[in-house]
Image 1 (tube, one colour):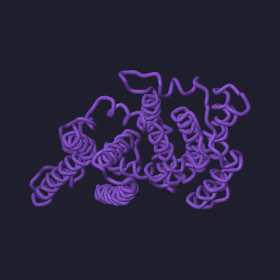
Image 2 (cartoon, rainbow, N blue to C red):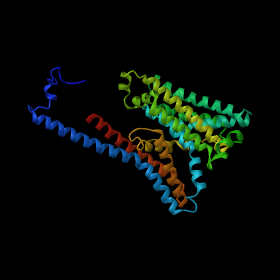
Image 3 (cartoon, helix red, strand yellow):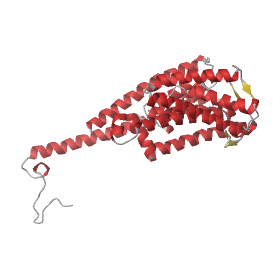
Image 4 (cartoon, rainbow, N blue to C red):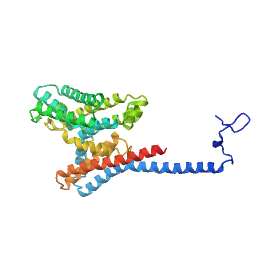
Length: 362
């Protein structure tokens, strides 16, 4: 629409005219715009660099350890093993992303993995159930744990950190109780074969299962209203509520889905090992948190995202495996994961604060 009247007279407000009445202000405005564009350009370049640091680091770690141990580390079989062996960790990390994105924590994911695997083993091995029916029951158990977490977190109003720490301890106790503190082995080959035996491009199918879940979650986060609501809830629940988002429902749903994905990770765990240990699953909690926060520094810096988390998982795994090949003791794994978690949380907070300053400046 033209900003001039029928006779060609400029009808814009005086402060928007290009006349010589206030040349200083017009020049200052134009100079300010140049500065803003330059600052925005620098911010975009910095974001691209941040988004690419971890993927480049992953490649660098693989090349470095491959050069140090070419006969053992840089082989097709070892590469396939590293990809497939961490499929459970990928799923546990993805389970964490949902409540983390909504502003909550779920410390029960590792315990749910163990209970899910034990449920499958007990029903299939000791009670003769069809293994897929046992997997369905295990998934329902994970959903039940998620419902309990969401009830006490959202309805009662207790901090999710406290609630999920309590449910993790409770679930771990239930696993020890139902198993008699014994390992149950002999899970049906109907589950084991499509998990670790069957392969595509020499990589066991369990890797592709985890990758498929990551791709689905990425699509939901990026292209669906549900994903936008989840991210807005985590960024600012008060603002999200004012915009019409049902924050309580989003938070509750994220915890329930976290329980479900953790249970599916337990099914993958049972299929990978063919057994269930009474304390299994808890070992995934620390590396999963490390990968989740480390993944928030890449691809979409300052935001929890599935693709970044997958990259972070394999960055950690490639590093730990390389150190083991070089003869590092077993405790180095805990040192590596712990240090990675601290650094990842620090970098994630720095990025988020900088993003917040940029938004305020705009």
